[in-house]
Image (cartoon, rainbow, N blue to C red):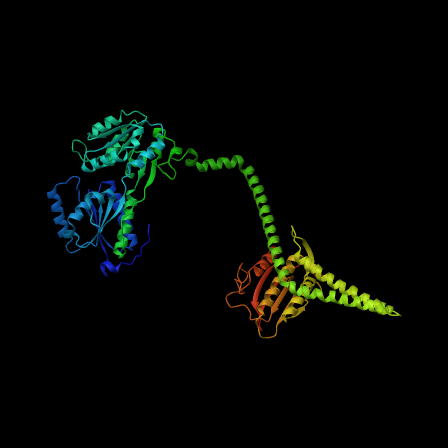
Length: 602
């Protein structure tokens, strides 16, 4: 169903509410009239917000088909609507369509005409091009196929139809459409009988039969019927399942069929009306069809629900004993197996939670390792430069020692000092390589350990020192207390410090003022260790404090937006918290807070 604005379309009717006249071919008792008409009215009221004038006229053409009556009805309606000409006329069915097309000038003038009925109506009546249809196909073959699905062992086929003009048209159409299908059955067409003869014949049908009921608006004696009432009489005595192409039959003894519901047809027509009164272009559309079955009739004839075509709608399904008495059954089951079920559920929940925790931990380790590798790549230039210093010093000292050794009287104290310098430079190189190894180490498990946040901060500063020097950034630290014991994975917390510090360095890349990076640790009154990392950059834009920790958020053209997100994940994994703000003197300040590993510092 398409959506429509509630405002009245000014392209068609100016400033007043639109007028829509609904023409019914018969009286209000016919289910097609009631269902389709009610759907049209409901949809139009909803689509216009009630800003619409709706009129209904029941032509009763089945009981009064004479030309004199039709002319008098047309004259009466022309006078009735002389001062309230409709803007749109909805003609339900072929008879209504024929009536309004023939008397359009006198009754409707330039009104848009929308016909709701069978698509064959357009071809039979040669409707004008500006008469638009909400059509359904009279597709008896689909109902026949539906019947074959449900009654696969049937060998006989009976097709029933009445004596009115519409009944005869339906029968002729069925004979043509079923020509190929009927070759698989012993086929009999029952038409032009009295209602009593239809009922009597249905009561003697072999059980291996399929009965297709078309319409019976009139029997051979000229008596008028509502088709579903005629089907009800026939199905009540039938000895074989009855199927039909109309949805209303399902409530009156039919097993089901491929149908267009009157509501669906009415809604389709109403959508066309709404488009018309809003000045939109409209064209013929087809109402949707559905395979529908009555569960009560399936049970009556022993037909299996499993044979229903895919997507079929099953109506009137009776709930099983368990469905009817579900509360009693649940209570009984709970009394018998409650404790067992609870234990099983608890065990499963425990296993599920453990699996989820292990999976989350594994994902955390993978993400952190990837972040560590990226960080090592970013620091590689400065680390290589830093490593070259002790290596170069070792080489210079070794060369100096070689020169001294070649002298006539080598100075042993000088050689001893040179060797001490070589050992110190070797240790410096070893420390740099160890820090790099720790940065690149991949673990399969989180290594919980207690460590001093002050010492870890000092180690991180050593890693950052070369990169900071390369960028012209002054790094300083303020140590809070002798020791701040924290329990977590030491490498992970170090990664948090590095992520925030590198981000801070990036933030100062374009600043023209003095570049400073400060790392400060302290102990709070509620026994928590806090690390503050501040920079002298431009700070965090207003309104972005809540988003900077979200994945993929970045202000850098080459950034991934994952550094701070990973940092927050790590901190929260170990029971800590992280926040950001702008400093009083400019720049950004990030605070990482962890609970102490013990309540008192030592």
